[in-house]
Length: 308
Length: 267
Ligand SMILES: Nc1ncnc2c1ncn2[C@@H]1O[C@H](COP(=O)(O)OP(=O)(O)OP(=O)(O)O)[C@@H](O)[C@H]1O
Ligand SMILES: [Mg+2]
Image (tube, rainbow over all chains, first blue to last red; front, side, top):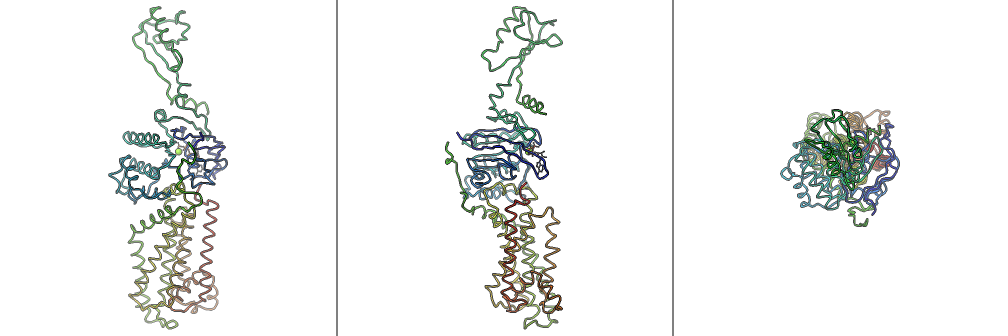
């Protein structure tokens, strides 16, 4: 299957001489949700802006749906919807007018039913005649999403869509995103909320200082790096780990009151039963236990730190 | 999944007419919202010119080549309005989205630069032509008018409106701040218009200044436009028309250059 977006050897040096992207190679599959994570200034917005035609690339090629973004920009861009990071909206236009404008701009015939459906899905229907400047920040964010959806894009870019957005809108938004995905739309989002990537994405890319340092299916990423730790709070202090338990590679907390066992959740067997049996045999009793899993956040922070 | 399953609403060779219509409509709606500033204030200010120069002072000034002074200045005043309004409107029209950031949508849309230009410049020119016609109608209330060559009158009006809307568009793209938007209209266009024979025939100038005046492009526009009213002109109408087309071509070439280089629109 040919990827819907393919980026190769892409670099960007701004007029100031600052190199924001250093040789990016990336392929996005049709229909996936791709989350691009990275610290401030990593180059996420720059990358998105190049694909959408707002920033010109310095070198390299990008194709969208097989169409080169420079030579065949009409075909490439007509597939794309963009929700920018900043709240760039008109002020005096009504919601309805600005959303209809977007559809026309992308060369599609007017379709009031479609616009109505988009506005309703974003809980904007009762605001359709309001001037945009009378809306709150979160509402403006919805308007931007509605504008991007007005022209029925095949690929949707969401640049930090949930920055400054309340729980309700986030839920609305993820519902919209799921529905879009179900209809075959490819979604690329950037976010600083790692839980979001963890919850929504099929695949995750990490960008740092203009370089993609990792792309991985979320499940595999979690699997690879997703170790779990079982902590047992003991009844009685232990001075040392008994010989008998050595094969479990346990760690004893300095207090002597906690035993920590790390295991791979995806392994054939976790070894927990054996451990508990051995503990019982050695008459080590515990009053409580808990398990913790390394989150995407831990993974992410680890990666970016290593890269520094 | 085959690549041709992907919808391609706009082919590479076609013109995105709907986008032109969207931009044009957006700009015209903006005019509609600011109807008072856009139409009423220029009409009021030109009416004042007619009252002062046409009725009050004009009666004491002798006729120029058989045309009363009040009537003589009408074409010049209409030109003055068309020039300044076209420039201001078109420059503001493209500068404002740059300023607010909404330009991102235009840049990311499947539209060519020429389509963007047609949308913005078309709307600005339409507005000045409407304004010019309204001022013409207003003038009729104050002074006796006669239009010998209505076809040419419209031609000069349309060409000038388009040319100066293009100039405004270029200024809007060049400008980095609101002051710069005002700079060229205020420092270049208005003085050149006043010196360009709006209120007098350049025949009344001393010979040296008559030669200098011929370097003022606006002399040709005003002269040609006045000729379409009263068949009197400072320079022959053929030269006026040729110069008008030359300015139009100059602006088109500049816009084309901006398009080629992506000047100031894309980072
Ligand atoms: N127009 C510009 N001229 C010069 N440098 C720029 C320009 N735009 C962005 N940069 C720089 O390029 C780098 C990448 O910026 P970009 O906006 O792509 O980061 P980002 O990953 O989107 O960050 P954030 O998470 O803060 O949105 C930054 O160091 C930024 O300062
Ligand atoms: Mg960003």
